[in-house]
Image 1 (cartoon, rainbow, N blue to C red):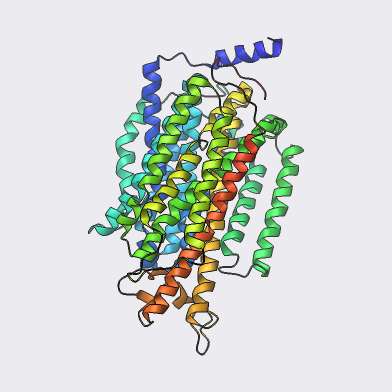
Image 2: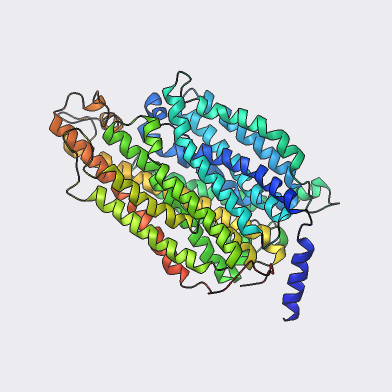
Length: 549
């Protein structure tokens, strides 16, 4: 063993916690409650929110606003956790998340609801980053994959219960707003546990708070947040609110590119920031494996496409209630949770990581391709009872493949990145992987929603006639949106005045539009499978050493 490896091992051993296993387990278990809160809020949204506010064009923003807040602030929280006491930063994010939930529940219109979702996303990303930071502070390298898999398991349970909770409240006399108010009660119950059990560790003891605040990379924060906002706005507005070739859309894309270039220059040249306090961990770019892990982690957005569109598919085409549509996700989520748990346990035991990416990517490609062909082929349509010709059991089976595939790698990169980074770079590695996950989900969902809305509106306009502008003999944009929202309802909604044949054609067009989003799932799986070939066939986590890779 060379001197560098010996020094790295000593540094890691010095940073290893000395708490007994039972205390570590209790601490990790308590942290999982916040992951549950965060994941529950990811899918708890009931479709009736869109219909109550009559805002189909803002459909994407219910989820994208939540993810945008998380993505824009992920690296910021990573730097804050590296400067201040992790326990108090974590608890501050709990309060922020709860405030956003309260606003979502009390929102008088869609705009206020979206603002609440953004606040929840900001606080939720702080919780998410904090969990990995606190786990790194309380576990050994060899234990870490197992405890990180706990977070994935809890996340999956929250994802499962989200649609069910949202649908149940929507059908009850309480209404969908209580799907958000419930977060306040869960947070209040868990707060004493977090307060008593979480370790209080200052990463820079003895440094005054004013010095820590002064050393934060504010220039990098502004440039990063601004660039991500412009990118997300462009993807969501393009082709929906504004044409892709409009000045607004082009201006947003150009601004994104300019801000991203300025961020790169600012980080590389350390402008208005010192080298150790840069927002973006540029030093990790010297390790090719980190770039591979970043791309693979961003591809985890593949699983959110069926999570979002499978319930929508059944609601629009079969008239499912919110609760029934949420239950349709159970096969996908159960297998996703199972794959995450097995991945964490076996990686901790045997140490190999490359096969999980290869096998998971292949399964994701197969599942995504089957979903695409079953809903986007020219032969798909509706039966006489207004249901899709693809059996529900087949859709469940295809989504199971996606769940098994993505579950094989969605949390693995957090463990691999920490094992491949030098001890001093572990917080930066956690932040980088968290950014990759949020960025992939945010852009992936924005693109998928844009594809769906653009195709669905175009197809429905062609079927109903007119150019969507409400001219003579045509239909207005609002009428098209209403037709899409209520296509599967028994009353017919916006299609009440149309013939049965026209209604069936509209439903078939919506199904085809949803199917087109699965091209992104296939692309993500293929990307992960190919990149896995550039990973080393090696064992990690066995000796709990850290080194470059």
